[in-house]
Structures are given as C-alpha cells and as structure tokens.
Image (cartoon, rainbow, N blue to C red; front, side):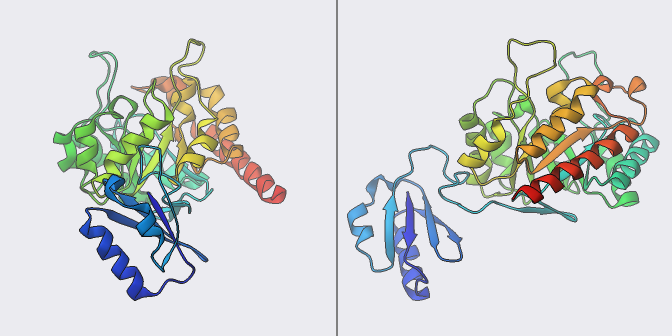
Length: 336
C-alpha cells in the first residue's frame, strides 16, 4: 500500500500517522521528494480501512500495490537509489565500471590488473576468491587467501573490492570486502539472502540463468526486508536455446527493471557473451540502454587464465572500451 501525503505535511501530523500505522503492525518507508512525500507500507495491509486513511487531513491519496515485492518497488520509492562505494555513486544513470579478473590467481596478478583497470577509469575491482564451477575438477578459487590478495590490491590502488560469496559459512571472510556479490546460482538461496540483509554492505545480486524479473526482484526483497536496502541488480545473461554465445544478454532488462524498481542495474557482458570480442559491443549497448554500471572481466594474460580466459579482455582492450564508453555517454548527454 502507498500513502501519498499532501504537500509539506506538518511534522506532528506525520509522526502521529507513522505511530498509528506502527500500532497496526505496518512499517512505513518514507520517500521525501521536492513536492511530495510518499509512505510505502510494508506488512499486512489487508486490515487497514483505506477510506479511514484517506479521510486523514495529512493524506492526499492511498493506493494498493499489486506486485509482491514492496521495498524494491519503484511505486514505493519513485527516486532512483544511489549507492556510494568508494569514489563512485552507483545509480541514477551513472556509469560505474567494475573490472578485474574472473579469479584471483596470485598477488602479482591481481595487483597488476587492479593498477591497469584503475588507470583506464574503473572505479571498483572485481575478482573471484570463492568460485562456483560447473565441474568439480575446475579451479575453485583461492578461498580466504584470495580475499587477502584482493585486499592487498585495494591497499595498493585504493579500489573498493567486489567478490562473490557462496555460502553463509564464508561470511566471516568478507568483513573488509566492500561489495558482496551473490552469483546467479545463489540468486534463490533465501537463507543466504536473509543473512546478507542483516549486514551493512552493498550487495550485487545477479539474475539467475532462467529467472524472471519478478523472481530477481523478490530475491532482492529478501535482502531488503531483512534490513539492508543497498542492493544492486545484475543482468548477466540468461539461458536460451541459442548456444553460440555462453548466454543471451537481455538488454530489455535495463528499462524493464528500471520501470519496476528504483535499484541500480548493472550489466555483466563477460558472462553473457563468454567470448571476449563480444564484450565491447554488448557493453556499449548496455550503456546506450541506460545501465548504471558494468562488471567486466580483465586479465593481464587471458590465454593463461585459470578461469574464463576466453571471455576476458586484456588491459589494452579494456582501455579502448573505456574510451568508447565515454563517447557513448557524451552522446547521451548531448541528446538530452
């Protein structure tokens, strides 16, 4: 349920309304706009008499929300959510680039890649320490040691760190990680999502291989309902009948998710394509479609990478892509 208040409500009336709602088991989320204040009510609203609520002096209008996701719903929160991480403000149409290798392999490797992507304009460093792999015989990552190396690269470059968690038991290792990534395979690991809702860190939530927008938003809702509203949605390609590319990048997810939700939308062209030469055109398409950011795999020697070298850009290719991203953003600005 959404309650739209009259312009410039008196603070005493607002406090009384919030107390009245709380007595009925509802949690109001307040969005304060320039000309309008909106209360998004979370809880069992079926017991609320809409007519009584509409008669209150402070209330302009009341509407029920049909979608099952509330906290993530743009109707509850009309303004874009912007999540500060390091020097980046992620959201509201900004273009924040997260870059780094698929997996951390050594201190020398991760620091070298971190330095190169920072020099090209990346604002955050990605790198896998715990790796979910289809094959049990594939490289599984360096685990806790990999996180230590990521933090060493952060100390060297100042770039905030993004890395993936696979299980609740690993949470202790993520104390100094800046953004926790939830991979596609864990998008509906609801116990993990609830635990991540209890911490004060941004969460990068990837869409599952065969999940709908609503299912992605309901997973975000698990995190937000537990108290953590700093969620970024990530489209990383979905499984379709086409097998020429690793997955199929759903560009329509950008405007669709931005219509449904106020949360930032990040695109992962590396996992979508699975082929390095497709990463640049997919990245530029995502920028043009209004994505808030990109997460791109970069390796200093893709041919020798222990994981996903085929989809990784070299530092030189990444630098060229960043220059083209700047041109697309400039063109967008001129068209407005």
